[in-house]
Length: 419
Image 1 (cartoon, one colour):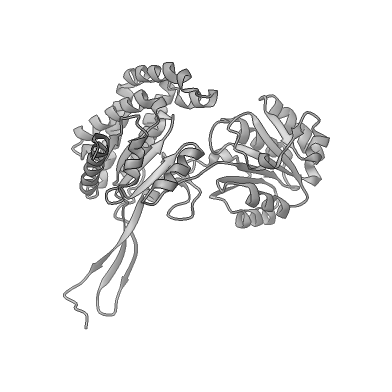
Image 2: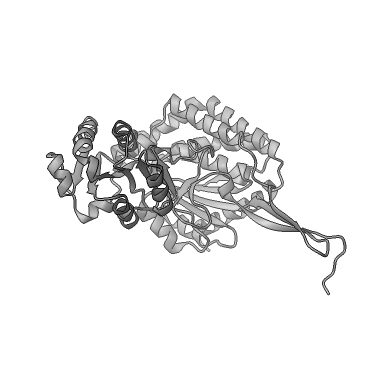
């Protein structure tokens, strides 16, 4: 066995032991540890910012886009946001130990279905140091050990955040190896971990499509993932058009380089003549390029022609595809054909149209009269999230503490034997 392979196995072995110890830690102790971690992150802000400066200095050499550099950049406000996110997780109810069902059999056996941690999580992510703290907090709160494999672009920032969190974990008397960071940039390390289905229970990749497809191809354990975020806003014929404009601009422009930003706009033909020129002007103020179908280009002369590929593209930048549709069902069919099952929104005052949209669009999170940007663990009351899943098993949508648990059956008897 090579040194790298052995090192990876040692990390996973320590994580497995820590997961077993952490599974029995009381809720109050986990919450107190997370609050201590938040305090330590605040106290270490200067050191974290210094580490982030090293990552930002190296960013041009990695060829990062402006959106990627924005995700990488920390400042005092963002560090406070990281600490507050950890505290938000600490304030959530502990899912571990929740009795999901209980029945008593005719022979007196009490059968309980009890929520328990998944165990060991292998988390692979790219250039977002805030995700380091979010993932560690969510995993710990749900009683799991986590192995963090962040991108090299954020290596210094993530390493310093983990240092702060491990210090708080140790001071709290919890198993310190419940949070570990893989500190080698060697890509082969990922392959070693993905083969350890005897030690790792689930892998969660969070990053570009190429990374996620590699993980899905190589992993021997379940993968919780989403490939892309091709999110839609559909403006129905019964929409409040001022509301629709505000939602569209927010969904597209509030932060363009994230998975829950809108990439496609669908507009009912009955309101297109009024709405499209107006929203095009609003998007233009944010330098958003529009590509559209023939009907869109007739109403928005500055729009370019949309190709078939555009309807399924996650731009992660100042570009949006726009189509005029004949009906609600046409919009639903378009989304189900081209969407990525991430987040899709309808703007309408028609309750029946909203109900049909929410029931028929195959997506992890469906919004009615709200921006797609609300598909976020914190915004939906889950606290910090470890990712957004477009799978249907084991979890779907933003994944917080409950989504990092499974269940076991606990059967209580009084001497029963089977005849």
